[in-house]
Length: 381
Image (cartoon, rainbow, N blue to C red; front, side):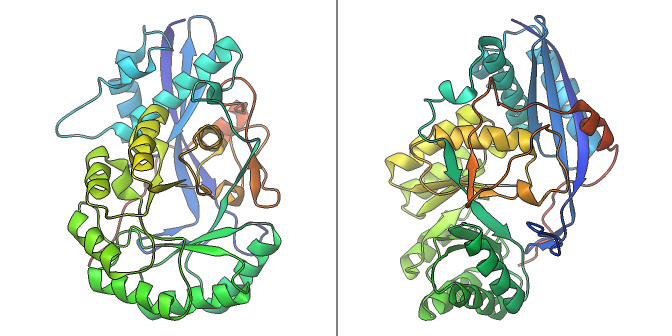
């Protein structure tokens, strides 16, 4: 069964406001504010009429993302069998340009098509699911302490056990906010603080030390320092009792290898798109698992397509021992027919062929855009 076409469609979807249940907008991070999200939906068709779907980011903007998929990746994928996933996609290695996220989106579509062709969910190709439901972490942007505390109580009442929140704009605010959330739930929730590379070593050390003094021990302190800073993370882990995690560094195999070798991290927050796909993420998890480093999966306001892939990957990966971040419940709409729901802080693992979801092509057309900006880091240290 050979690939006959690869197409890319950029879409934009609003994020529900905080005034609505499960809404989180404006979602304030240390580097930007989100009120809508751009994603790239990838469609792969085969000579037997099987269609596979994938999803990736739109960076730096839609025309570049579409051109990369349709003009660079597609010509080298068309004509190959859908099961030649690793052989074909490993060939995209350019010394001065990284197209890994787009390769990861196409790989997802190939897996979806392969699963559909044999009538099996992709988790069976990844080792088989170990669970029917996956506990997920609730994600929250930067709010004032009182509102953050209220949202923490709400999350606990909804059955969530972990909250990931953003930080890095102000040390005092971050500490006050985390303490307020911790006290509001009487210590019933675990917290993750994501610095998104916005902190200096001194700021990161001070933030975590003050939280420790207040009795708030994070499940992990995520990527407070910039990437490519193995020495900084090594010193940070030696200085603090708080568990140290990386996210953006986990997208680069060499960075992750060096961090593990130097015993610089306690957790790796992987993402199958910037890492280059499901197979590449499996390889990364093998490395950190051997080093007894915990693993969680990142979220970028993913649509239902990528959410399906993440849930199947998590369910089939013993190394993924921490709940994945999920924010898809905050989207005002989606491009799949049956949206994923969160029940008691958990999401069900799809069990249909391929990714186990059906794309609504009318919704795809409704949300299609021709312009916009992808995610960029507006950070100065």
